[in-house]
Amino acid sequence: MAEERQVRDGSVSVFQGRVIVTDESGGGQRAVLEPGPGLKLYVNEIEVTGPREVSSKDKIRIELQSKPGQAEVKVNISADGLTAEARLDLIPETRFYLEDSVPRQHLILSTREELHLPQVEARTIEQALREKGVFVGIDQKAIQALISQDTGKAKIVAKGKLPVPGQDARIELKFKARQQMLPDEEEHKVNWRELMVIPTVETGDELAIKHPPILGKPGVTVTGEPLDPKVPLDVELVAGEGAKVVNGGSRVVATRSGRPVYSRGKLEVYPLLVAEKGVNLASGNIKFNGDVLVRGNVDETMAVSAEGNIEVAGDSTHANLTAGGQVYVRRNVIGGIVRSGGVDVVHLRMKESWGQLVQGLEDCATALTQISKHPELGPAASRQGWGRVMSRLLDTKFAYLPPLVNEIAGAYREVAGIIGKEMDNALSSFQQAVSRRGVLQINGVHQIWDLVNQARRIVNDLKDTTEEEVSFTANYVQGARVEASGDIIITGKGCYQSYLYAGRSVRLEGIPGIMRGGVVQAGERIVVSEAGSPRGSPTLLKVDRGGTVVAKKVHPNVTIQVGTRQHKFQETEQGIHARLDREGTLLLY
Image (cartoon, rainbow, N blue to C red; front, side, top):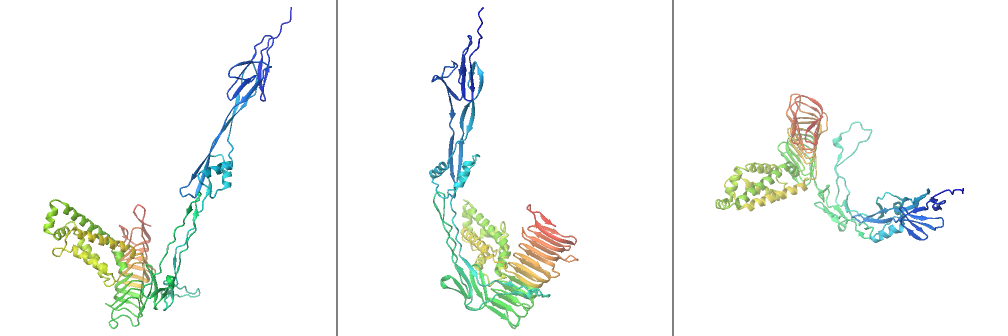
C-alpha cells in the first residue's frame, strides 16, 4: 500500500515588514492574500484590490499609504498696530505601518495608524508675517517658542514701539502759600497760632518761571506706520495787578511789594493795608483791594472788606468781615458776620437754589410756549399781554419763584460791592421778571427763555469760580454767622450759639472743642469734641451726602444730618461717627 501524502494548506504571514508565503502540499489549499486599509498590494507588479492566491514564487510588494498634514500660519495685528500675534493651525499627517501577522491561509493585511504633526520652520512664520505687512519688531525667540508649543494658542511674535510722551509746559512758583513753621523739638510750650507765615515779596522779585513743553518721540507700528506722540499742552504765564510777564513770557516778576497769589491761572501781588490801631469809629470802615492786617480789634458795627486776606490780631465784636481770601482772627469773634472766600461762599451756599431757579424758569418758559402755540389761548394771551399771563402763573403754579429769587438776591446783597456787574444785572433782571408788583413788563415768551439761558450761563460759570477753597480761623466764636468756601477751624474752647457754613469742613480743634447750640453745616466733614449741652441746647450738625460727622460726645437735642437723613439724640452718647452707606441709610457707630 502506497504511503499517503500529508495535506497542508499554503499560508501567508508578516514579520518585520516582510510578507512570507508558504506553499501548500498534498493537495492543500493555496495561500490567499488580501489588501487591508492604508496600503496597496502588488503581486508581480500588478495591483491587487481583492483576495488573491499567491505562492512563494510570486513577487509581493506592499506600498504603505499616508495622508499628508497641513500647517497654516494665521497672523492678527492688534487694532493699535503695536503687536502682531501668530497662531499655528496644524492638521497632523497620518502614516500607516504594516502590522506583523501569524501565518494564515487567508490573510488580510492590517496596518497601524500614527499621527505626526507637520514640522514648521521659522521662515514659514516670517513669510506669513511679511504677507501681512509685518516687518518691525519681529521676535525670533517668540517664533521659536510658538514652533515648540503644541497648544495652538496665539503668541505675540512682533512688537511695535510706543511713542515716548512729551511733557506739558508747567509753571514753577517761586513762593509758597501760607506755610507752617515747625518748632524746635526742645520747645515745650508752643503757640500754634503764631506758627503760620504768610509769604511776602518785594518789587522785582521773581514770582514764577515757565518750563516750556517738551516734544515726545514718535513710535512705530509693526507694519512700519509712524505713531505720533500726543502734542504736549502749552500754558501761558498771566500776570495780574502787581506783577508783569518778562523774558518773552518765560518769567513773572513783582511790580510792587505785598503777598504773592497764584489763583485761577493768574499771578498777582496783593498790597497790604495795616490798621495799626484797629478798626473803629476813628478809623472808619475799611474796603481794600488787597490784604488787610488789623493790629488791634474790630469794634461793634464796623466793617472790613478785602479782596485778599484779612488778619485781625485782636477780637472782632459784632462786626462784618468779608475777604476774598482767608480770614484769621487771632482771638475771638463775638457776633457779626464773617465770610472767607467772599462771593464764592455765597455761590456755594446758593448752589442748590440756583439749580431750582434754572429749572423753575425753564418750566415756566415751557408753559408760556405751550400757551402761545394753542389756537385759542395764544391769541388771547397776546391781547391781554404776556405780563398778565406771567403774573397769573406766578400766583398759581410757579408761586415759589418770587421768594426763591428774593432769597438768592438777598444772599448776594450781603456781599454787595464785590460781586461782578454781570451778576448784579442778572439778579435785577430775575427780580423784575418774577416780581408780583403791578403788571410785569414782558413782551413775549422769548424774554423768559432769555432769562433761562442767562441763569444757565451763571450756573456754568459758578462751577469754575468755586474751585478755590479758602478758610476761616479763630480762637472762639459766639453768636456769629461764619461762612467759608473751604474750612472753618476753631483753635480754642469752641463755638456757642452760632451759624457756621463751610464748603469743605468744620473742625473744632481746641480744648475742650465744644459746639454748644446753633447750626454747623459743611460740605464734607464736621469734627467736634462735644456737641450740645447737658441741658439740651438745640444743635444741628449737617453735612452733604457723602460727608461725615465725628463727635466724641453728643448731648440730648443734638441733630446729626447727612444728606437728607437725620437722627436726633435723646440722651448723651460717646464716640459718634455718622455717614451714609451705599443704600443711603444713615449709619451711627
